[in-house]
Length: 100
Image (cartoon, rainbow, N blue to C red; front, side, top):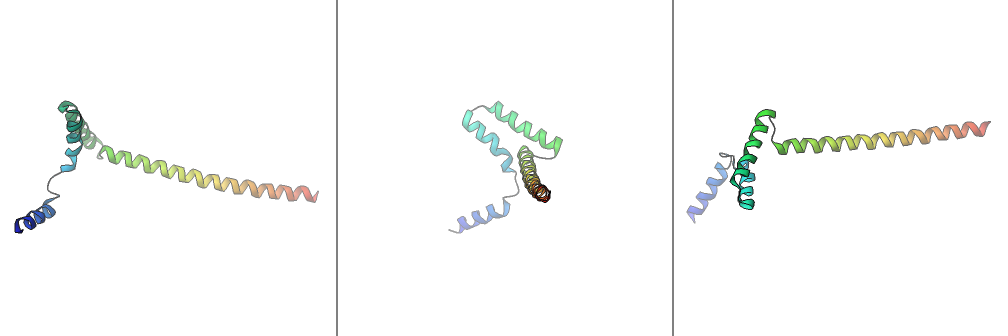
């Protein structure tokens, strides 16, 4: 029982010592396809992208999705503003025509 708690404590304290997440993708590729060369290319391209841009491919995807969400939000706000402006102008024109 003491060994179990020692192992658990070691895992909790040392979990950030290795970048195991960088190897998950290639490990899954090898497990699914059995192609070590493809996994190596995948890992190498991920490292090259991170070295060149400073972001991982998943960070690029996250940034892209967030930008698209922001664009969509701005479009909705603009459409809402234009709709209210059009309704306001129609009301003014209608009142002007009724006076004549």
